[in-house]
Length: 360
Ligand code: NAD
Image 1 (cartoon, rainbow, N blue to C red):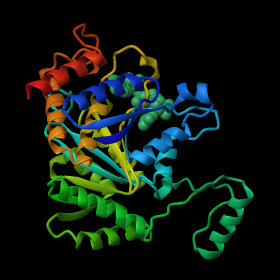
Image 2: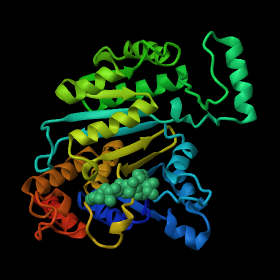
Image 3: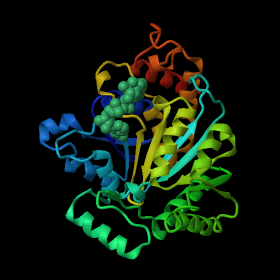
Image 4: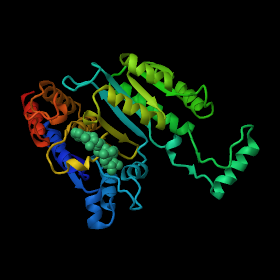
């Protein structure tokens, strides 16, 4: 048995966590679930949205399936999701974007995987606010060391990109491509403009690529990449990106395949991995047994792959695809008309997936 922490989250979290757990169990995967709490509900009880016991459970088990958590506004707590990523050094964000028959989209046959660096770049949170003493000091220093002058009314965000962190994310992308039988890795950058950050990223990408002669390698400038993904998405396979471009292109690619309800994700590091849907806690649907559990269930597919339970992963994905393609036992968002009275609830869609698994 493999121990996995199940973080049930808040909002629609507990409903989709229950659906995903039942579907994963139905594949026969030998998982011993350890349920842990996080989010606004537990904050009311324990005074913290992320109890130490939850962090400890993920640390101990190394793998977690996590339902969405509301980011509390105005409580002094930073995003729990960001905190967990930092605590466990989850440096790689994996976002597969795949077309499923039955999901409304302008495109068909998309099968892309985005690998986003999670720790550096403009997302590192190193910021200097306009008008502060530190900011003035930094601006003075920069003006003394550069031909370009920055005004005293500027705010500044820093963009660090290091050799070590670029090497590990690009290597992760190639390892993933090899493990999953994929043919090509595309590294995305703006090296023509940002020579010392994106230029470094590109140099390191090229170096790492030499260690993987069996996988094709190419690079693309980020703006061109956006256009190419809209015009010729079939040309791409695994795409590795720095943090900010990864954030933006993940949403672009989720849009190619029909949006949030079917977009799974994973954050993976050396010490652990957390698997979660791309969407949030959709608070207005809490407790209504209404929302689509697919994104978290497909995150479960990624988790089973990660745990080397490939047969179970395949079974689960096939069952989800079959239920969506049939279009009968699906939630409102997967119906042509969102008010279609034949739409089923979260629980019933999971039941249909479980029945399908049993038929495979
Ligand atoms: P959201 O993704 O929760 O919801 C936006 C809208 O998308 C919903 O109103 C709903 O119409 C639709 N939607 C989302 N998930 C769906 C599903 N499974 N099935 C059907 N429809 C679905 O985004 P939001 O409203 O911006 O965020 C709500 C809270 O979630 C915020 O506090 C935010 O910070 C948090 N959040 C958490 C995570 C996470 O835990 N990983 C991710 C994103 C947002």
